Amino acid sequence: MKGRFITLEGPDGSGKTTVATALCKRLEEKGIPVVHTREPGGIEISEDIRKIILDPKNTMMDAKTEALLYAASRRQHLVEKVFPAVQAGKIVICERFLDSSLAYQGYGRQLGFDEVLGINLFAIDNTYPDLTIYLDVDEQVGLDRLSDRQFKDRLDQESIDFHHRVSEGYREVLRRFSDRIKIVDASMSKEEVISACEKLIIDLIND
Image 1: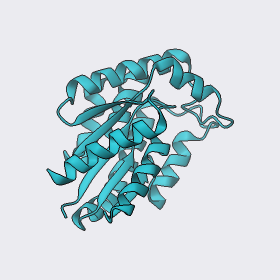
Image 2: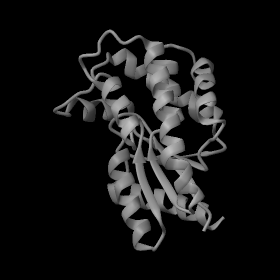
Image 3: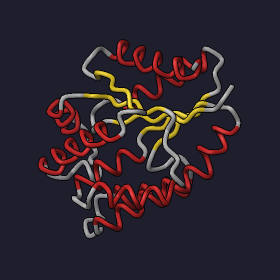
Image 4: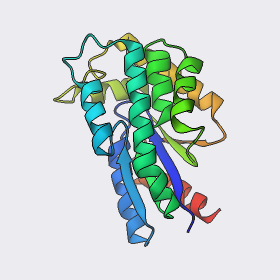
């Protein structure tokens, strides 16, 4: 079987981890080799970078430093985990990837969409996912879920205006990369969301 790289995107509170976990379980039950990972993180070096980026005490971090750290984490994660798994014929399901940087740093931090894209194209060698599933949830619903979290990392603690800009950034991502992104209504029941995502993946595998 040909390996595939699939990413899950969406704002905070859209259910990426829940969906990714369930999808991996379903694929494994079908005998499909699958790897579940996340960004930033997924491997030791990238997890260490994640701690630096998201630590609430790092309030002095410059926006460009943040963007570069995400790109560095992404590069190491790709070469150490994603590329080998895909080459071995596995399905990689990754929570967040390039599109998150475009939304959060490009728009949220106001660094510029194309500027952040350029940094990341260098990091990923122009490697895009075979499929990106965008979990679409009403902005206020996502913010409400975010406010219910007991622990809030450095990005969770950002202003409402920041999160509004992130939503705007995702709209631009959806516009620019409509060829590889499929939108799933994350306001449906959990079972419906997972089934819709599973169908998209199976269709890709069988293509």
